[in-house]
Amino acid sequence: MPNKNDLSIIMYYSIILPSKLIITKLINQIAYYYRLFDSFSITNILWSLEKLNIKPNDYIMKCLLVSIKNDIDNFTFDNIMITVNVLLKFKITIDKYIIIALQKRFTDNYYIVNSNKLMNILRIFVNLNITIDYNIYFLIISIIKKEYQEFNYYHISNILLDLIKLNII
Image 1 (cartoon, rainbow, N blue to C red):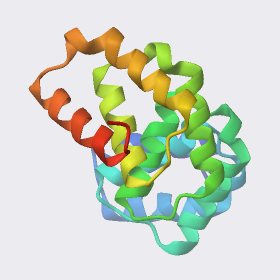
Image 2: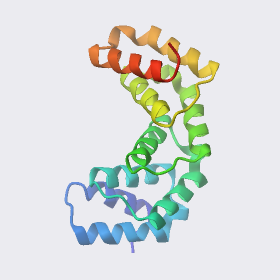
Image 3: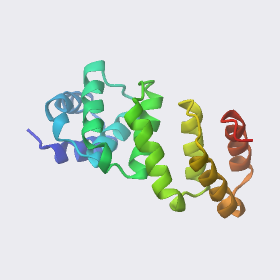
């Protein structure tokens, strides 16, 4: 039986060599190890499931959400963005603690946000219908001022649409 780290690595590599039997066994192992997963393992598992286009059943999703809640403080900005994007793709309700963690990681890491990450975070805010507070509003504006030279037409159009949807402009 693989340990929790082996499981996340095997899930990651199962994208390269997918086998229905292996994937089914690995998904079933999530229920056994979910209390031990760290943020890296959770992100790898969710990312792998997304790439394999496999939505886990409700019980496995509940296990993964418990894992996220248990280790939410250790998620990096990138990990939480990947996690939230996958949960949105699977149409999973995103709990308030995940939204708060996402906003906190954005606030703490705004200086590393480039045009692509800004576009992704704005899309998440729109999809979650998050009301932007003034602190996040000013961070978004400062990122736009810092990164505007890196924007291409795709960034500009999507960012403008999202800013309008968020009632920022």
